[in-house]
Image (tube, rainbow, N blue to C red; front, side, top):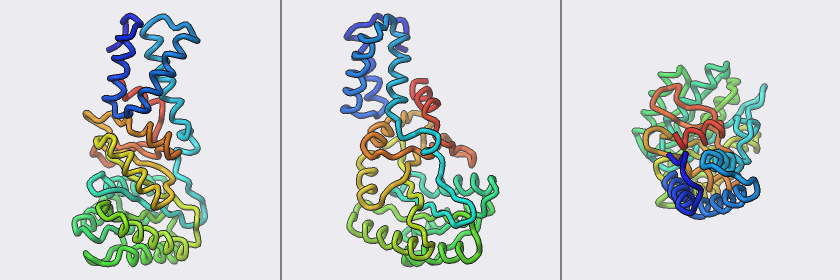
Length: 281
């Protein structure tokens, strides 16, 4: 789209517009354009094709927390691994949990899911449905139960019966930050006490179509719990997903998975090279 064009202010303005439309945000966009202009001058780049390739390299360099080691789930053999999954309602949290459960089960892990979003009856039903689809056991209680009690039961069951991974769903009620904070602090305490683990994955699910709201959600959840990674959903159709650049830059957290469709297999481990290329398709 920008190939074959003359290198001038108009080209930089077009690149700036492209980055903003990709949800990278104004601050990160200005930083990237400044770095790009410096690279063009230093490397004596002559064509728009070279500039385009340089921009892609700069974008990949921004994802410094996404090397292969950081991107993979940190799972240990011979002990219970906890995946605590957080995020606001409607971002695809429960769907992501189901898809992760399928991946882990297919890799030979014994997996259990805790339906910890007890405030929405539909969320409990959705977890149950994913349990049936994947053949993974689900721990649940009645709609309106204490979420912490579900987490307690799930972790205790997982520990007593030799499960490899417990994936824990949570409510996403951001309209009351204090309640959410108290709830997640309680859940964290239960996980540590019941599992004996202090080092576990806490994954934030973000909808790539929400743009800059995703950054604010990431800030709030990272204040409440120490996030270990991000799952970016709905990266198909019109979503560009550029929001991951300010999130990873500011919070210093890796992207673990990216959702690219509705199918059960459509949750992929994050690959920064593939992601940057897909942004400009």
